Length: 307
Image (tube, rainbow, N blue to C red; front, side, top):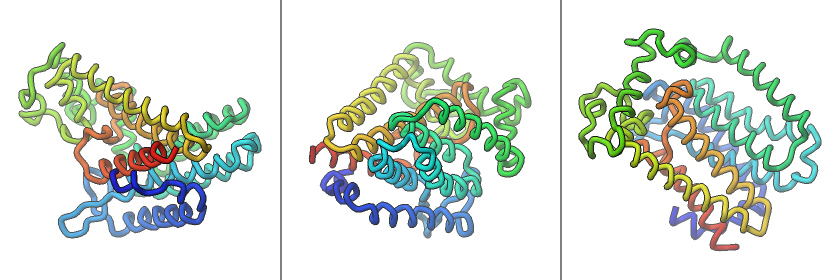
């Protein structure tokens, strides 16, 4: 973050070739991880000796940069369908590679970033309706051809939480028990029974919110929400104060990406969304996600300093 704060973001703004190179590198590594990646928690990572690396997290930042550049050059003409189609093709390529891993959750983050920037850049209502219909068709195709059985079972469990309580809905039930047992002020740091006694799986990654809620309670949750609200507000404030559309759109895209990850992670911990394995930003264990998010914050810092 500190390094990219000193980096002049205008190099990215003024040189499309740099962003295209980053985009091609992101596609390359997403392709490499399919063939050479090691399965970790259901998805593939690049394993270099004892160092695990997930190129997907950095690809998210690259996609936001690419979309910010594309829409900043064409935001006046965004009503033209070809710009919507071309911008979606840019996003569809990494989505396809991600689904081959398979990683449905990260594919949804890509879609959220694209749709969010399309909405803030300006779009006709009929085009939005067409996008929603196409999304429904694409989901049907994914259900028939891309989603694995365990991913389908997670979605079916979300629709019927009482199904298979000792199987696919076990994680959700333990998550709800952990959140509810925290009550107002929680049980104290390191004293959560669900997490410490290992009833709750993936308590350091996917279900970190449930652990936090059990140990810090409802008061702690409100404080956590306040921190996220301040973070997103500051990112948006820096974007709106910037003097160019690229900075505004990147700030919006990055904040949309962070918000989408928060919404999905907490939603799946509360049973409001299917369990699809999305980390909670700046909270879940995982170096790649943490580094990528701080890289994005570094670019935001660079925008703030140079505006």
